[in-house]
Amino acid sequence: MAGRGKHRRPRTNPLTRGVVAVGTGGAALTLPLLGATHASAAEPQSAPAAAQSVPRAAQHAKSLTYTVTKGDSLARIADKYDVRGGWKQLYKDNRAAVGDNPKLIHPGLKLKVKTTKSVAPKKTATTSSAPAKPAAKPAGGVTQATQASAKTYANNLDGWIRESLDIMAQQGIPGSYDGIYRNIMRESSGNPLAINNWDSNAAAGTPSKGLLQVIDPTFAAYHVPGTSFDPYDPVANITAACNYAADRYGSIDNVNGPY
Image (cartoon, rainbow, N blue to C red; front, side, top):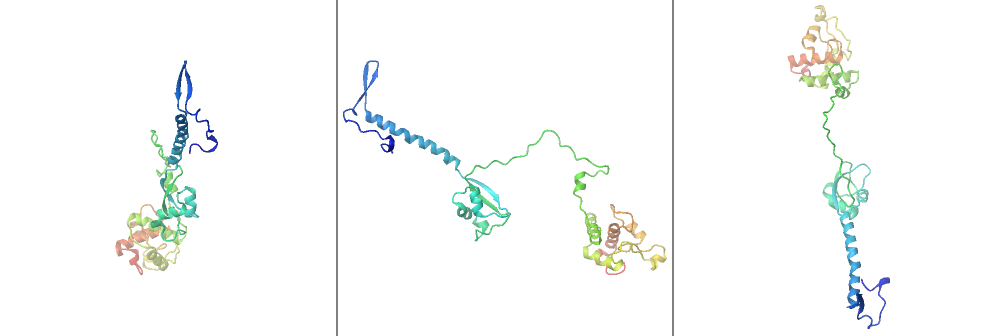
């Protein structure tokens, strides 16, 4: 407000406030001092208006999506992003997602946050004009990435069954873990080197072998590509036996006795 504070004009004689002479090459031009006073008072009003426009633009709220992490709270998030109205406003904006208790927010929850802070734009991946270099291939023709991502299995009965099930799934051979395990325990008690030297097959010169007691001709006829040709190999034996059982009984799950 003009006329207050340290910039207040000192009171002058009414006669001297009337006019002031300004030299203009010998002639005298009279200007009313009152008008000059009003002009000078208008100047400080325009400066703050211009100065205030910058903070308003800087404080313009921007919306972003925030994913809650472990240890977060609405108050912490509101403080981090300088949310107008604090955590209460943040809760109000996200009540549908948060629920009735603002203290219960879980990791992974998506919140809409209106921040007054400047948000750096996300970096976008730049594409190169040069063609991508193909992954190096070993002698077998399988990429290193495929080898690295290959699934590993335990070298025990559980691992053998699970590896066989994965191969069976790729080949469209039906069967379940329980069906395979049940028949293995009946046929060999889980011994991959088991051999039957006393039944009719043994008398004919083709003893049953391995976890699921498969004779050599059946193993050869139902051998699944990608597995070992050794009938004592646990995975090869299981997979070939399940392939045979699927052909004759519909599935190894349907086998409940000698087959």
